[in-house]
Amino acid sequence: MASGNAIQSIRGMNDLLPDQMSTWQRVETALRNVARLYDYREIRTPILERTELFKRAIGEQTDIVEKEMYTFTDNNGDSLTLRPEGTASTVRAGNQHGLLHNQTQRLWYSGPMFRHERPQKGRYRQFHQFGIEALGWHGPEVEAEVITVGERLWRMLGLTGLSLQINTLGSAEGRSLFRASLKDYLAPFEKSLDEDSQRRLEKNPLRILDSKDAKTQEILENAPTLQDFIESEEREHFETLQMLLSSAGVHFEVNPRLVRGLDYYTGFVFEWLTDQLGAQSAVCAGGRYDGLAEQLGGRSVPATGFACGLERLVELVSLNEANSLQDNPDVYLITQSADVEGAGVRIAEFLRNKDFKVVSGLSSSNLKKQLRRADGSGAGVAVIVPDRYISGSQLLAKPLRGQGEQREMPESDLEKFLRECTDQLP
Ligand code: HAM
Image 1 (cartoon, rainbow, N blue to C red):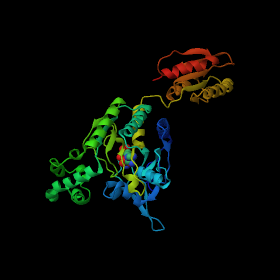
Image 2: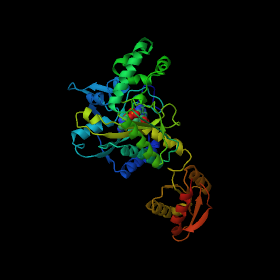
Image 3: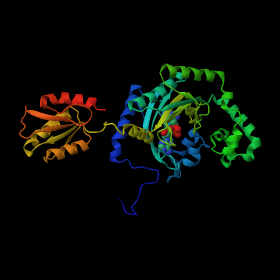
Image 4: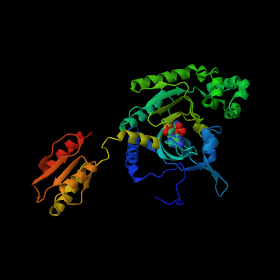
């Protein structure tokens, strides 16, 4: 442990230590694989961007822009911000490099994001997101695709129990009518609203719907709802999406109160939730944001996407893996005497060539002690090279997990035996 005055990392910004990395790497491999299966291509953008980008994209009145950005002035006097999310940068890059001009793009990204939130379990100031953005498609089909990418990812990671909530925010016109009507309704109650809500009443009354204040919520009970302003075309679009999701076998719940904390959404929005991570229940979230490319100075491009929080995903995978042997060695190799060390090294290398994960005991201490170590390593099978072993004579293979009897066999039978054993492990 470091002494009292040793330098520590910044609060809410975590070191990822070697013990955690194998789960991170497995999650990252799954992300890349799911992106490949749907033909999404990777894009990498800078971590620093002009502050203006996020103000315009996410919205000046949002929590992220109002109080969570890491913003500073550089030596040229430019205001720069550590990216709090990846969608704005992806669209900025798409505009800048002509990727959205008369063509469609399926893009993905993964990397660190920064938000000055109050840190707690599952909520950090540096965290990682994996995101996909489908740019150029109008219909509900692409929305269904984006959902199935998520669903497949959970399946690849062995995650069950994630629930999907969906909603539609309607068209920009509908929303602006709703905004005006909500403002009219709330105006007479202004003095009774909480402080934040009073401030938001003029510029961003929709955010008042998220207020945690009991009195404000009471006032909102009789307020007009967004659903009253969804036009029939939007409603049809949303119904077709629900039909597509049902045919893809995706379970979902329509939550008319689901609104998102970023202003760029238009129409479809969704969140994948878990009840396994306490308060930080959103693992993945996104929706349609048709106005963003134009808002950032490009042409109008329809767009849909999502981002997952990798810390939350890794935590879920770890919880689900607590009892599984996924990352344990397949084989623990024991040599019974110093004379057969050479054979031991050769057999270990032979098995690694066959893609088994092998831990060598590297000792010829007594067999009982070595078997105890083998057991502690979590390996599926102990392979024992007996004293006086020569090529062609019998090895001993002892399954340490699941069923299967200890057996003697020549080296030539070992691979087949190990495949059977490791497959049958839980
Ligand atoms: P978001 O809902 O702000 O959306 O973030 C997406 C996910 O990032 C959250 O569901 C959560 O898992 C994770 N996340 C957010 N903040 C933190 C934090 N402080 N600590 C740990 N995890 C966090 C977006 O960022 C949009 N760009 C999503 C999107 C992409 N919409 C369309 N395309």
